[in-house]
Structures are given as C-alpha cells and as structure tokens.
Image (cartoon, rainbow, N blue to C red; front, side, top):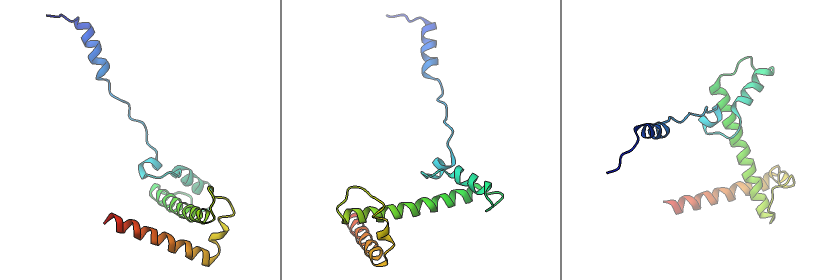
Length: 121
C-alpha cells in the first residue's frame, strides 16, 4: 500500500482545478466577421455622417461591406483563373467593369453553384 503526502495531493488538485480565464471577444468575433466592426463604428462617429452609431448598425454595415468585398474578390479570382494567372492583380478588376464580362463571370459562378448543390443533394 502506498501512502501519499496530503500536502502534495492538495497542490496537485489545486493546479488542475484552476479556472481558465475567458478572453474578451470583440464585436467582430461575436458577429463572425473578419472586418473590424469597432473601427467602422468609430469612423462613422468621428465623421459627419452620424453623431452616434448603434452597435447593431455597425455590425450590419460591416457585414454588408465584407460581403461585397468577398464577392468582388471572388469574381476577380475567377477572371484571373480564366486568364491563366495565379494571382489577382489590378488588371483583373477592370474586367468587372465591362458588363458583358461581368455577366459572363456571374453566369459561370451561378453554374458552379448549381453543380455543387446538385452534387450535395
């Protein structure tokens, strides 16, 4: 039979039972966004657009802005792939200004989404 020193057991238990600190989460993390919500909220408040901006409004605006940037980058990425380039450059963004080219890219992305949905179901 083995005897254990009580003082050592208490130390071991106290070390393993310590509570972990909760890290503070910012608005962006809580909303699931990458763009900084607080930055846009402060920018609006500092400017002449509005005296106060509600947190919900800042989160909504940041979400919309993030969505638009993601869509533009996705289309520019498709344009880069069509031109057989590995990187998105400034030369791929003017392709989005041409209505025919933009419609073609949107149509291709729609077809790809339909293929993915068709495979998933």
